[in-house]
Image (cartoon, rainbow, N blue to C red):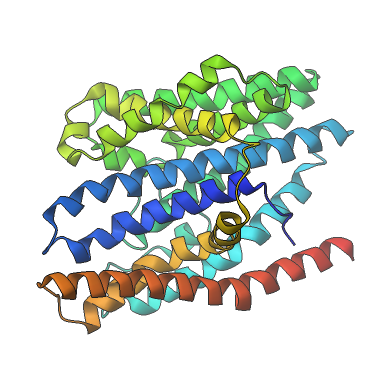
Length: 353
């Protein structure tokens, strides 16, 4: 089973999925509350917070495995096994669910099953319309696959462990920036198209890795505390219409990292904050269910749209919005209890066998 997370990290993970749900669920509020459109920032920033959290946690795991490994590549299979057993079964389950919803509840084009099964559906091109929320999972899985290989290539070249890690981080950040800069200069890709292209986004998780190293090295200082101020800046920008980002070369290249740096500072500066038991009791549960909630919230949304007439009254809009949130949370709890937990138990048995 997964180790219990720090209460602050649980709170951050809960905040990330809540932002995503508020963003997606705003469609039910818009007829009565047009200003709910400003909640769109949550879809962007919730995922960016997930990226930084993943990098922060995975960084520690990778540092430990490299330190204990006697060979350049020997540590990679166990790392991949644990990561993919945590993420891939649920992803595959909802890939099947979304295929079953095609042509009725969630009209979309038929996907390339090979591409979606291998997370290659959006390596260098924007994510397809089908199973659109899977774009961020593709970014994470490509990161989990590539980063250990890049580190190990440097280790194989007889570069010491610390320098190999630094060079791997630099190489992957440079690659992502090069892709984004090329896209902005030489293509007409929109902000959201750049956002959903896997190889353009690996630096977002890498910022989490860097801050994991800074945190473990006790190098979090006043600059990090000031960096938290980047979070409201990112919220202000992300709440604006998509055209605002599309018209800005700077934002299409750097807004991701502005948000990621703000969240990385937020995570590390408040890591040891005392989270009250009442808040911890709620956020620890939401954090556990967050992966399932991310995968299931849009199928729930499409089902509600399909079976329930669109409300226009104040009470109707709020009622359907609450229904969306409740159904998503309850469904994610069921998926976690009946599926994810069983997979994690199987993973741990296979590892100890």
